[in-house]
Length: 534
Image 1 (cartoon, rainbow, N blue to C red):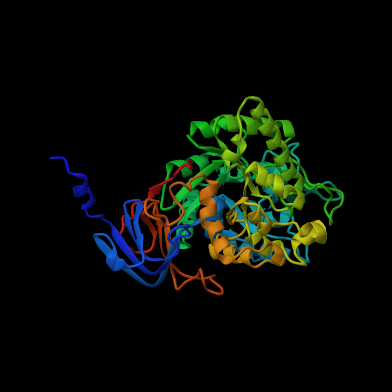
Image 2 (cartoon, helix red, strand yellow):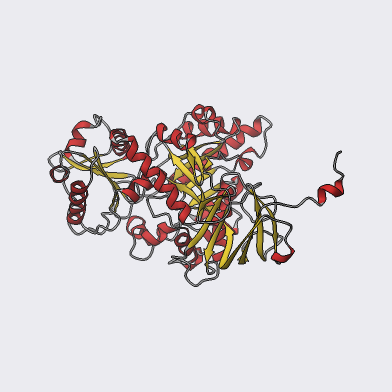
């Protein structure tokens, strides 16, 4: 007998009822709630009164807690992040001598073919960096690769300089006698990074991957945008993220010019950390005017306009979203110039509004002068930004002012002006450039040295949750907390959304696709698979 419509309406809605002090929905409809039901991968009911909830199998009382959309980190490098968490973290060293001692201590206590360290920032060091021979002396015969905090320069030992395929590569710093100092930038840095990864044991990399996603889940992060590229960890690392099973969602980007690499893996996007320029810290971000503290250079554009335009056009015709790394204003001007050219060519073919529909991304976009803001809004570009960069490098005496001068430093990361123009903002950490810490991200966006660039607490939360969903073109089915949407949720003690300072708030549980990624709730806890953004 086929059930009638009324019979169907009376069927109980099975699932788990979560009851908390408050549910932050971030939706335009129901803004206040206390409870919700999760069934499978979906939220199936949200309401004020848990006693009025539809039938359910289990009930979990989360008194003293709030539930909200899980965080999304819209720009990460997971395996390097895991290596920093499990290995040599150099973010706290404050001198060349401390850097050398850190390498010596780590090398004496750990095995492995490569001493991989990350996070040193020589801006402010009062003494010289260790020489290649210094590093070789303390490393016990192993190769040494130490990544600068921004990942765009590195310090290596004598053995690595000799063994890595560096012949005729650009970016090898030399002293007055023509000898390598151990500092590598641009092409040389990329080559040695790939060489060092290739020399590491797969088991060490796998431990790092597991630690990275576990760390994210413990912070209330249920989805990350992994920015793989030939110059970061290589294609094998990308495939491991695509093929593996992880407790959180990994939206994997591949920053290569070969569109077929993305299409062959059924990705809906191409690019990510596709470098149009470098970084401000290493003087390789492309500026329209020379650096204030090194007027002999304006940085470098890595691609010419013809190459970038052709890539944008090929990707758009294939229906792919693109993402590029552009930090300096010259690189961002190139993005705008090339997208306008693509838009004109598509209009000639009778294709209108394809660029806006693509939600094409610009990663970082740090030096953003006012005259570019309207063009970014007009093209419908999404800015994937890292507010913690301002905490690290902003302010009157920070690296931005040193590299750019006060006037140009006033253009960095203008979140308020972008939001006011309706530009989509997706926040992330660029881990491991800055630590993955979503509440630190929120506070960094809310409290700026220049208050004209600040956004509100709720805006910063939205840009750290819904912003990543918009950037990955997932917002039709995940993001806001309402019936029918995917259950990607975070449960926090107290109420960090209203606290004066939410940093350090404990995440009680993280749900990714309705499954427990962190915490202890009576819900399915099998790991989820990597998800490709749509």
